[in-house]
Image 1 (cartoon, rainbow, N blue to C red):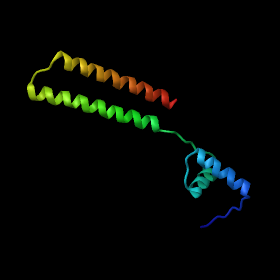
Image 2: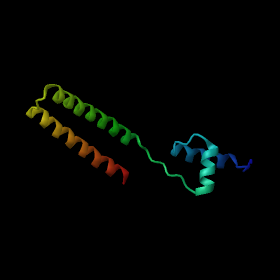
Image 3: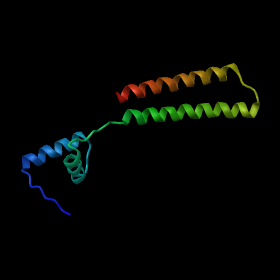
Image 4: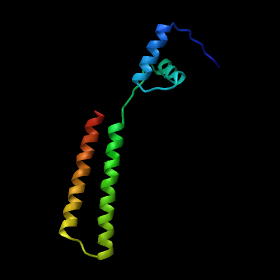
Length: 102
């Protein structure tokens, strides 16, 4: 079903400005969301994506240490220290993520 809603050029400009603020690209989807819910919540997740990349890098480092341990059967103080350091990095990133979500 088609629903038409004529707007002035000024109204159209205001709608498009609000869409830009939300990084919305489809006017139909934006207008439906606004008509049904009355608001749109936008969350910039760029920082969270960056933190996820960092967590993946930390995970790769831990896997390399684990492979080394499994192949040699020995664990060195330096490896344990690096694991502890990587774990601290993970906890710090987690705290940062949680603060970002507030």
